[in-house]
Length: 548
Image (tube, rainbow, N blue to C red; front, side, top):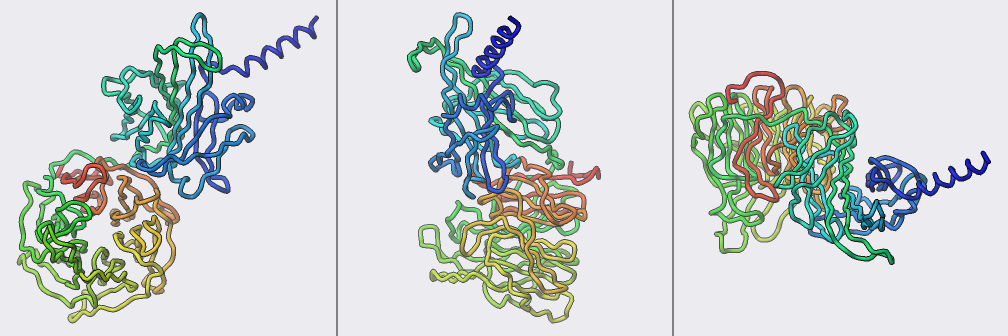
């Protein structure tokens, strides 16, 4: 009798194990073992659960979505151990992954309903890369996170429209059991995530809808969408300030801080990928950061875009750039310039210095000791001929008659880079390659050995380091990328750390140090909203700022 009861109980357990309770949901998580993979779990949170339940969801369909304008790329899921697994290509490893599964019908009390599961994850923890997939045929119920300061805003969309009163549940590190609530009239649920880690977020939506699935009639449909989110709190946050916005939005300009003054020279006022003399800037402006009442106009010069502006001693140095000779209705006639000049803030006058050996634009420059270094860029000559620069240059500004000289040739050809001096070496970050598209790579030049070496790649992927900016401040090296991430070189120099997120992500901007305790972010543009006129101020310490 006892044996029969045990047999019955065991059979009941097996039966129940094949039917998920309300605590079972589908989750997708990307990771890398030897090759990039996506894993699918079926349980209460984004971690392995009972592997026997996986056979009930083995028919799930998953896609990598590298580009919001492109087609979703189907992934092949296989049942392995405690998860369904799909191998990702290198391109797919940097893309969001989505999943959907029609589980089937369930009966609870007098109601029979159809159960639909959806899931999404992002490849990394950079908030600026958390985008809405917007593919209703793949993910009709979607959760999109947005980090604002230390608050997480979770927007729930149903077929592309905001969904009020959706039930949202958040589980993860530092949370006792769960956070739960409903979305507001704008489809947003707000909460604070207490610490770093992988968070399991889900949203529920139900509708009265009759139908039939595999011979069983139902009267309603329950939809569950999950988000497996890697999160890291921001150490640096933009603060309120009194810094006035730029009078015009500008990209690819020269920017520098000298003393307590912020300078902006030249750049591009027009639309992306369209250049004309009318849309270029020759404006030169100054802002007193201690008493930021207004931007002051200074004597400028010829119009240039894609230049560099660096401080040294009590002066500023302007290097290269290109000039558009065509008008707005003419074909591009763009010419890289070899101009090199010094600006004296005491006299508000420019002095011409020895020209670059060739025209150069879309480069960057940095100061190490008494020497100014120029790396990257190309030489546009208006006739359709453009040469990517193979050389890198330096000039000793302490000499009475300074002259340009070549340093060891870089093992790369890039433009739209960031160049920064740090700990006696030069760091060349990101940019566009002559062949191979954009890159997250970092190269390091040691002037003591005259040798280039490979540094740690920036966090992120795709175009994130195209038109990035970098500068050392407070004995650390910082960089900002297109997605708005603020990154810092780790103390051991072997990796980059995510330390903050800009309120307005931008590229072709300038990240500039002020008094070794603050970073000022000026200019640039967003892929979605265009040019950005507002400035951001990031304090690196508790030092009080008169601009607050």
